Image 1 (cartoon, rainbow, N blue to C red):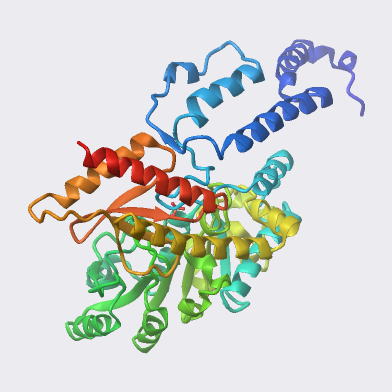
Image 2: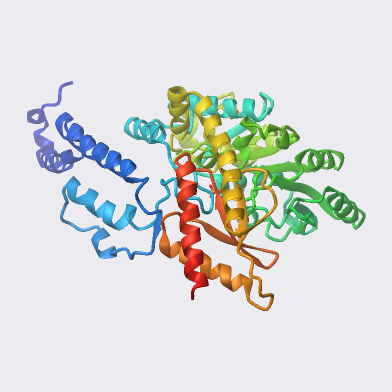
Amino acid sequence: MKHNPKNLNHMKDLVEKIERVSKEADVLELNTHSRSELLESVGKFANSYINNLPEADSFNHKKVAVERLKIKKETRSLPEILSVFKEEVTDIGLRAASGGHVGYIPGGGIYAAALGDFLAAVSNEYAGVSYASPGAVAIENEVINWLKDIFSFPETAVGNLASGGSVSNLIALTAARDAYGVKNEKIQKSVIYLSEQAHHCITKSLRIIGLEDVLIRHIRLDSDFKICPQDLVKQIEKDKSAGLHPFLVIATAGTTDVGLIDPLNEIAEISRQHKLWFHVDAAYGGFFILTSKKELFKGLEKADSLVVDPHKGLFLPYGLGAVLIKNAEAVLHSNQYQANYMQDAQTEDLVIDPANLSPELTKHFRGMRLWLPLQLHGVQPFIACLEEKLLLTRYLRKRLLDIGFRLGPEPDLSVSYFWYPLENKEADENEFNRKLMQAIHNDGRVFLSSTTLNGKFVIRMAILSFRTKLETIDRAIEMIADCLEEIKSK
Ligand SMILES: Cc1ncc(COP(=O)(O)O)c(C=O)c1O
């Protein structure tokens, strides 16, 4: 029946009220002209931002004028909003989209992924259950299948797209916990084996999932900071004979600090022999399996669970990690739930629904930000870009040697470290390099970060952004040499 307020005299007041607030709310539905206008402004802003990246500094210490970001009653025009966004957000701190971001673990943020996000947001597809959005869920699952193929995981494995490496690791570790029934009094006798070089999100996850009190064994590392398999075996045997309950081994394929890959094949074999869950955190390094470094990843396919981060190794903007897990039942045990209000969405095939494999119910349609770029560009440019990062790492190391730096071991991938040696053995080398790091941060042309390895302060360089090019490395060397002069002259 057509809506006619005249037929609703007994509800006149109510209808009038609805019409009044509805009119006020209408501003939320922009008309075609406004949409085009706003999109054009944002597009222009994005173009100018990206075009200026090669010249812009990668880091500065400017202070944010928080007052300008306050949410007030009065509205602002988009040009004003964009100018505040530029001055108080994108011009301050670390310019993570820049090729000059070679600290921590960068990625860059390819434009096509932003367009994928835009489409996901405009359509607001519900990527949690296939009943609501079979197409969006098919894309999520297609991305997972693509990953299974790359990492030689079986078709029966399940996976999920999460916000990043931390949540992906959380899902995997929770599945391991549930596969081995680690709860109640069993917790304090259960043992997990990992490296001091494992990312801190692993320990954080263990706390979140109630495993803070399990026994953590940090396995001895060799001089390259890789797990020593013999020590792993010895420790497992010792724990078993002490009546403990070893259940999980965690290796890293591309450590955050030094970019090294643990001996995956040997660890896989040890885990198999001792019937332990083998988890690999390949958040940073995983996609290098597509490059000339493939051999180093041997054994990864034997993992029970694996984490990779497209927002690192596939250069996506922040917000996409992935987890693959072979034991579907364990993942379902942790995450699947039947609520009355979801009864219409029930499906026979439980693993088809991303929400059944994740702590999230309503899920951002993340697959789109990877699926779209892969369709648009193909896979090959991503592989070439990773190869380029490996070569740039070699180039950087040679250039650093030329200007007198000492280097950490030959990196497996594209993270490496270095420090400036002091001839005077009495001098505090750590302090000197700390000052050098500070000078580099103050300079800001290129952003590097530091770490401490066995008490030694070192400077790291993580070459992973798709925008990091030969010129970026030359610029970094020029900057490092300038900063070195400045510190030496003090
Ligand atoms: C090896 C490794 N694992 C996990 C993480 C955490 O990932 P995210 O920051 O995406 O949560 C990182 C982040 O750098 C990492 O390098």
